[in-house]
Length: 227
Image 1 (cartoon, rainbow, N blue to C red):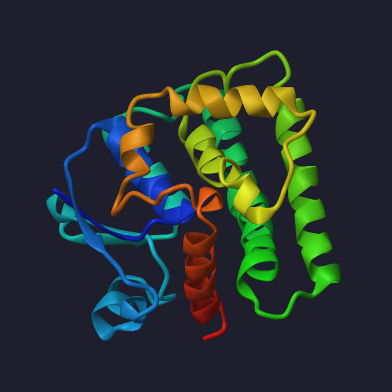
Image 2 (image 1 turned 45 degrees about the vertical axis):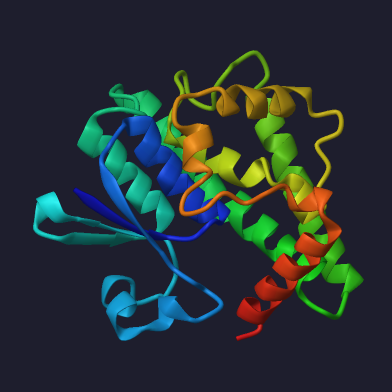
């Protein structure tokens, strides 16, 4: 059995979607970031960095793993799925996973901070992170020319990038004219476990359709990033 400590964010969804796609049994522990539950002594014992998600594999001597990409690799190898067996293709998949970890996630995350969460709107910062996110989208779009997936088969690389890219409107980043990327986003939605994984630990409604809900969510996010 696997314990998952998470909340409804792209990084959290990367792991819950992976668990669902692999059909692995797990128990969810919702972490309230606004209450600082990720900073408790108990949580920091699992992840010294005080960030979600974290898993604890009870079947493997209570092994605690943090960093979403590391968790995804561990789970894929444990189940023998979602990571190519061929050495070359496995390397390709991990490269695109790291592309998300080092590029898509940090840039979209900072776009969210300056575009949605900070009370003061610093336009040069907003432009910087939205433009860089868009550039990275274009890299993905080029990679997806003539192919369905980032590697030769659907993998954790697709799940990782998708969990962030699908939220592009919240970051204020356009996907206009990126037909390969847009088609890929829709294909990933159709893969087993994706929709269910997005509801862990709770389903987040489309905030862009509810202005008051969006403002409340952004205010909560602002209280976290300013701590």
